[in-house]
Length: 157
Image 1 (cartoon, rainbow, N blue to C red):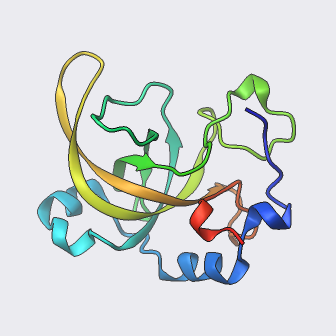
Image 2: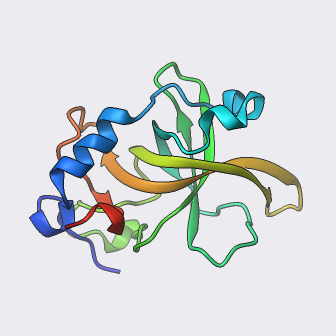
């Protein structure tokens, strides 16, 4: 899988649509609030800071997915399954430009919340995790959200 430059206009997608996603995102989402009132969050756009796991829990689906764990703006824990619509992860050894998503770096993740789903850990434990339709991924140090390193096909030109 090759890396893609975030500054490439075609890759960055429609800047107006992307800015609308950033503007409407809630930075307060966390797992506990989702478990307490799932209906409050379903369909909402959220954002948090996290890392993609090397070995995600097992989810019974045909859609490509990864697990992302981190925290919200108040440092409350966030652990979600993310569905994505174009190649997402690049192995660190394959990164040439530095503009890609790896399992070794912290990112700011934007997505739309779906219902919780049961996942099975690699040791056989059942967990219930929120699911996101992934929209945008930024480097953690991109405080102004100007250079996405991954954009959903739905937000591209």
